[in-house]
Length: 116
Ligand code: 5GP
Ligand code: ZN
Image 1: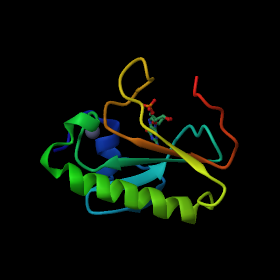
Image 2: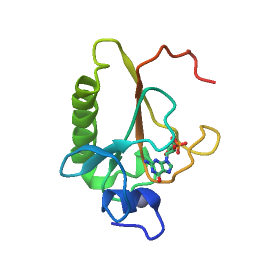
Image 3: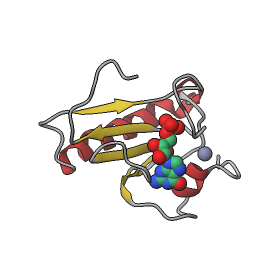
């Protein structure tokens, strides 16, 4: 389902522009508009899903496509060997700004732990 006024639904439907990196039947990857690392790609379900616990009956397909994209993009972006981080912010205190589930793939620099 596509949610009206959801920026990531519009990106997934190619109604607004983004730098698409790759896609699968149920998921799509594109460059973050405000990158926090040299490599910063967002991987999202094409269907509107707010958070991980709302994936529903197609959750297995979506997660298979999301993690297939993540591992392939880590190779194509050159961070598979050096290391990279996958982050999902869920809810206000975690800093989720867009209410359409998205996985951040971050790499290309050293990262602090724990995240602030
Ligand atoms: P959150 O804080 O919700 O975990 O992450 C949302 C991310 O989406 C941010 O890193 C932000 O830069 C990115 N973002 C927000 N709007 C757009 C957009 O219109 N296009 C793209 N490519 N990224 C966006
Ligand atoms: Zn959406």
